[in-house]
Image (cartoon, rainbow over all chains, first blue to last red; front, side):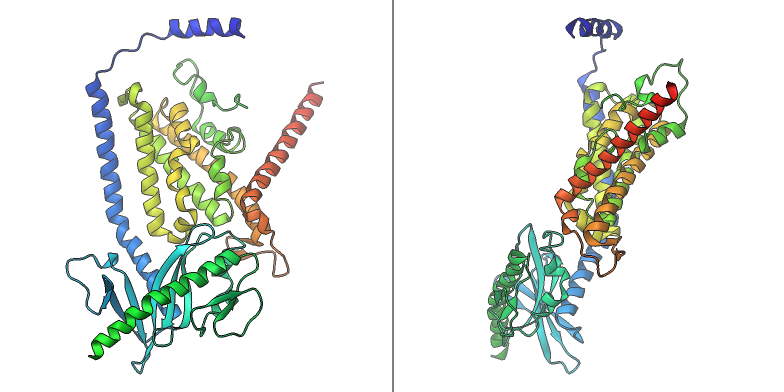
Length: 225
Length: 225
C-alpha cells in the first residue's frame, strides 16, 4: 500500500506549482463582499416576506379565537400590562409583543367567553393552545391547537382526534384526566397511546384558567367601581 | 462505494483535450448513476427525518433543489474571484444565504409545510450534497454546467424523497398528499411514519437496488460469455 501511495504523492507535489501567496487584504475583501451580498439579500427577502408571515400568524390566532368562542359576533382585545389587564393598548410598544386576551360577544352583546393563548412542554416539544373559557364560572368553551410536534400517529391525536377536542367543551376546571369514559363535569378521557400529550393539554388548560381568571375578574371589579 | 461519486466531469474538468460532456449528461447523472441518496448516500439525515409525509418530502426536495441551483450557479460564476484559502468559507456563506432565503419564502408562502419541516430547512446548510457539489463540480466548471448538474442532483434528491415519503405515508397513514387512498378499513402502520419506518424504507430500497444491480451484472456476465 505504501509502495503504491508514495509515487502518487510525489507526482502530485511535483505537478502542482507552488501556490502563489494571496495577500490577506484580498481574502478579507472576498469575505467582506460575500458578507455584504448575503446581508443585502437576506434583508431584502426578510422585508418582502415579513408581511405575509405576520398575516399568517394573525389569521391563525383569529381563526383559533373564533373556533374556541364559537364564532362570536364581536371580539374585543384586552392587553396584559404587568399583571393587570387593560382595554386600551399601551403607547410606544409593539402590539405583537404584548400578551393578549380576546373577549367574544354574541349578537346581543352578551359575553360568550374569553380566549387566551398558553403553552407548556409536551412529550416532544412545546404544545401551544388557544383556550376558550367563561371567566365567571371557569367553564371551558373549547380549545384549539396552535402548535405541537408530538409523535405522529400517537401524541398528535390531541390535535387530530375530534372526540378528544370536543370532550372539553362545557367542562369545569380544574380538569382531571381519566383512562375511562366519563360523564363527570370536570373529567376528560385521555387518549390511549397519547397519555402524556393528553395530560399536557389538561395541565395547560388548568394553569391558564387559574392564571387568567383572577386577572379578568379583577378587571371587571375595577370597572364596576 | 466511492468509485461512482466523481462524475465524468469532475474527474478531469480542466483538461481541454476531453470534450465537455453534454449538459444532459450532467443533469441525468444526478438522477440516475450519481443519485445523491441512493448511490452517493448523501443527505440521508433529511431523507429519513422529513420523509414521513409526501408533502414534507416534496417540499424538502424542492427547497434543497432551489438552494443547490442558486448556490451552484453563483459559486460557479464567481469561482475565479474566490481565493482557494477562503473557498469553503465563501461557499458556506453563499449556501447559508440561500437557505435563509428559502426558509423565509417557505414561511411566507407555505406556512404549514414550513412548520412541519421545522428545523430541517435551516439544516439544509449542512446538507453534504450542496457543499459536495460546490466543491467537486460548481467550483470547477462554468455556470451553465453547474446549473445543469445542480438541477440533476436536486431532481435526484427530490425523486428519492418522493419515493421514500410516498411509501411511508401510504403505509403509515393510508394516504397520499393527505388524501385517503387505502380507505377507512385500512389500519395505518403508525410505525412507518415514525423514525424506524424511515430506516426500514431506505433499507428496503437499497435491497431492491442491490438486487437489481446484481441481476444486471449477472446478465452482463451471461452476455459476455
